[in-house]
Image (tube, rainbow, N blue to C red; front, top):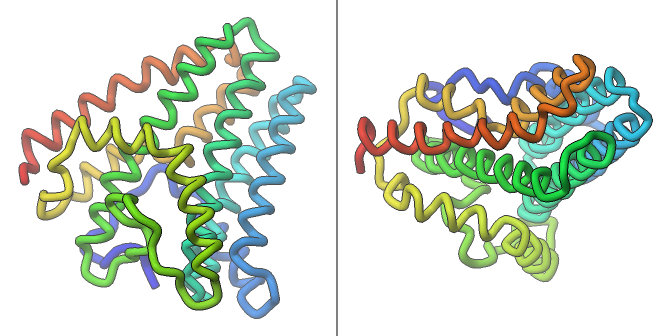
Length: 257
């Protein structure tokens, strides 16, 4: 099952790891490995990358950051191949992402001359960027014929548990998800409250939006580290947030509800 109908597929700059992830999934599809096992694996890769940054091994850190992105694409891919969609897995994936992002920026702050407050602002910015990408992407997926609708446009109440998971587990993960992502969702919804009313978004626009996908954000960090640009990572992502308003302005001007 694809996330999007064929006519809605676009060049996702943040999803560069998908081809390798599919090869990885092909090795796991007939095993006992579950998507949640894969989610835990990308969490471990993220922690190894953080350790490498602390040791000033920036090339290795970049490698594990990219590996984390590849494995991050594999858990959902495995769920689709095994036909085992899961809200617990979907929320766990997102919670791991935000925790690792916070640790990445706190680690960069620790080993560089960046102030704590600047790193915190950059973390806030990167999450806001990713939320805009996810907002438009989920809207597209929900409007796409046959698209993946595991993710909801508005996460305002716990979804009904899917086969293989308990409602209690879903409720717990939903609560954690809303605590850590709620503020970002609310800001983006306020900035572009009518986006969900648009019929669709053209492929070129979604490709442009995908510069805010987590995979692309991490790719930037992975390249900046070995180039000894660690001091510029935090200010870069703060300035990078200006495109949020550009993208929203394009959406409101050309793709009206």
